[in-house]
Length: 342
Image (cartoon, rainbow, N blue to C red):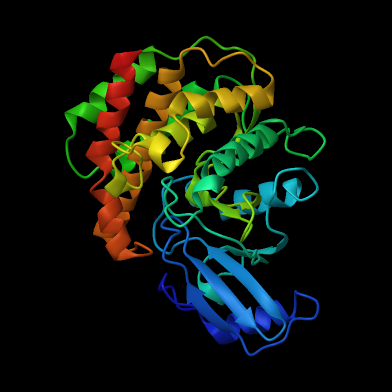
C-alpha cells in the first residue's frame, strides 16, 4: 500500500504510473503540494516532458459522497469541448497502491491564481473586467447543453435546494463537534423557505469564486475553472450567490466587507448580479437572499467537515484547516443575516 500521508506522494510509484498512461511522458518526476485544496490534496508534478496536476481523495474515513474526485474528472472531461475553460484531463485511477486513494491527473494550466476578490496584485483597470469575466464564464457554465456533453444524469431530478439542504444537514450532523444554536436556526429557516420550483436546471459548479479560477497571465481572461468537487445538475442562482457570499466576508477572510469598492475598482454586489443577468438574458434574480443564505449554510457545512478532519488528524493542511474551522460561526452568521433580510 502506498504512503497514505495526504501531504506526500510515493514519487516512484506515480512516475511509473504516468509512464504507462501519458504518451511522451518521462521522468525523473518531482512533486510539490499546493497550499490550497483543503478538501482533496493537490500536487503539481514536474518532469522533463511537462507539468501536470494530481488531485487525490484524502485518506481515512470520509463522509458519504464527499471528496468526489471521480465527479471532478467526469465533469471537466465533458466540458473540454465547450466554451467553459477547463484543464485537459488525462486519467482517473482507482488503484490505491499508487497514492493510497482514488486520484486523477490533469494538465497544469499556466495562469494567475487570484487569491482574494480585492485583487491587490491585479492592475486597477483590469479588476472590473475580471469581475465581468467571472459573470461571463458563470453564464457559460449555466448555458452548457447537458444532453450534448453527456451530463443529463450528473445530478438527480427534483428540487435542487431540497436535496442540497437535506444533504448538507446530514453532512453537518455527521461532522458536528459542538452545539451551535445559530446553525440550528439557519437550517430550520432554510428548510421552511425553499422557493417554489421554477423549472431551471443547469450545470452548477457548487463553489464558484475567484480563487477557484485561473486567469491569463496578463489579460483579464479566465483560462481554467477549478475545483468541481461540488458540481452537479441543479439550480444556477446558488453559484451567483457564492460569489456574493465571498464578497460579503471580512477582508481577513478574503472578502470585501468594509472595502471602498469604487476606490479600488471592484464591482458592487448588485453590479455583479446585473452583469450575470445580462449575460444570461434575464431581468433579475427574485428572492436572491434565499440563495445567499443557502450558500453561507453550505460553506459552514464544508468548513465543519474540515474541522472534523482536523480533529481526526486527516486534514490536508492542518494550519489552513485550523483557520478554516474557526470560520464556521462566521458563515452561519452571514447566512442568518441574509435570511433575516429577505
